[in-house]
Image (tube, rainbow, N blue to C red; front, side, top):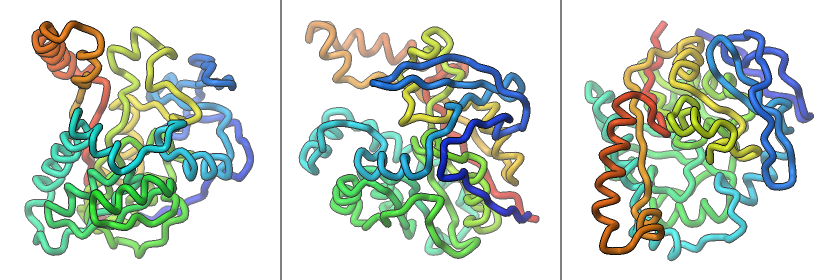
Length: 307
């Protein structure tokens, strides 16, 4: 398989067809966020939704170079990131789960040859877990502050580059990890096509992102917290993401639904004495929601098809 990758123009573009299945999209919602208004279209065939028109690549580079993938006005320090993770180790839990699943899918290959690309590495918790699992890690992130923190946490110095601009040899990676980053991409098809090119035969693409088909999204629609342009430009159901992966030469090996309410959220809203019971009830409810495949986050693991 060979594809010519063309990235979106450096101007605002209105897409006339669904980037996944090329069907006709229809307006799903209008979202007012901060000081701007965004139109979100949804494909009636595959269910993929996306901000339309798209922002320019220059705008996105400037935005993420400054904010990273959080758009926080407060620049975190290494100490504050470590303290927050110690209080609610969500990133560590997610990293351990995803790296463990990746390792299981890679178990037929010699461990010393494992090479992992962490796209949008953030504060480095996934890179750290990958290093612990004996991967040789390459990480990229545009945000300078995030790169500095990641270097301290993971021991890996991330490359200051977008995935679009990253230059690596074809078939040079065993695994590409995109945790909470594909929803930010300007051209999702180009990203998945490039991942296919960078992966070795039978390589693994692991993706974590918000579930557009989650129970909370069904109920809250455009008021759902993950519907937050311009940070999030793309909204995937498991079906839409699976279709995008298949079209671009992957076979989906595993799909997980993950829902979690941080312990600190419960502690802020209920009396301390009641917090353990409330947290147990919430976690049990979320496990049921995940079992019914309405979880708020999906983890998708796909293998590059050899041709």
